[in-house]
Amino acid sequence: MVKICDIANLSQCVELAYIRNNQPESNCAFCSKSKKSIYKDFEFIIDNPDCLMVGYFINGILTGILGCFLNPSNNWVDCIGPFFKDEWNCDCAKNMFLFAKTTLSKAIRFNFYFNTKNENYHQIMTVLSAERLDNEYILLLDKADY
Image (tube, rainbow, N blue to C red; front, side, top):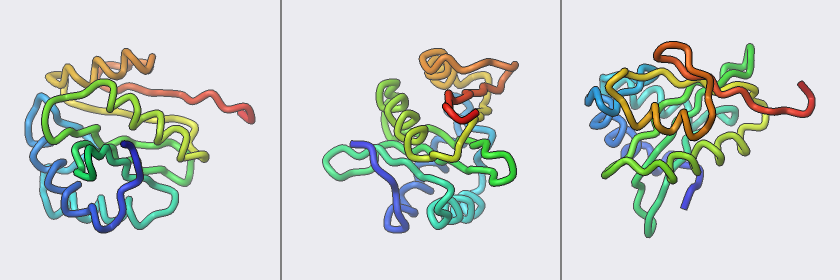
């Protein structure tokens, strides 16, 4: 089940991101490698009504996250993750992105930046039809008012 993470999930989100982000195969350049910095960033995202921490839960247990930081000056979203506790799950990653896209109504563009060794991110960007610019992917959203 995909839903919004709240402050009660903060420690779990930080642990998951810290472990996965320090592995080149699952690294995300928009996420710090320091647990203290990840905590501060995630606390900001969870407390900010224009940002979003998406969680994937199985039987009430957090197994995946996607952090979305919305820049209010241009309505672009920098994405942290997705990170998974266990094996990579492309379908769950896609569901979390679609949830974020629907929930963040102000967003006009999603940015993803990650290590070239992260084959899973390359796979999900292809599934989402994102535009690739070297190691950065951009997912422009179809909005009726733009």
